[in-house]
Length: 168
Ligand SMILES: [Zn+2]
Image 1 (cartoon, rainbow, N blue to C red):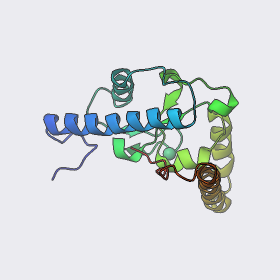
Image 2 (tube, rainbow, N blue to C red):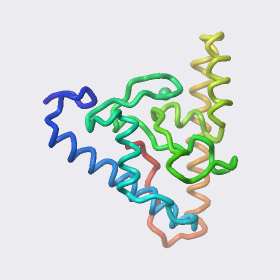
Image 3 (cartoon, rainbow, N blue to C red):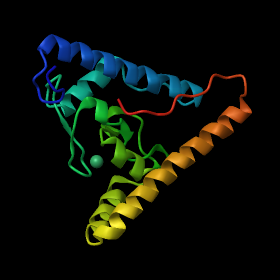
């Protein structure tokens, strides 16, 4: 089998995989908004797909560069992230949705892009601390998410357990 993310997949396969992944991601966001009683997504599934495809430079099997660590990722390896967090006044429209790698997404938490980029640049000068700090950040963001989830579940015990938020 040809590796994904290299543009080497047969076009039809790449397109159907793209449609499957973007469709399930969109549906997941929609359900999450409903559960959190947030306003409905201000874009359609087709508009979301166009936005993702644009970030893949129009190639269904294209790569997405993480804007923070510059890692070259496949669609499966990135998260859909509110670049400016909603909690910090970011909008819920497509213009605020970026596709960082799953690691950077977990480390960024509710930092703004400028804050996270500044932190990464600062840590570049401390290679030993860098690994430790990023690992701790990632763990604390995951921990905070799981605490929020268990609080929500304890308030609504009959509801089906939420799925872990996953990258594509
Ligand atoms: Zn990254």
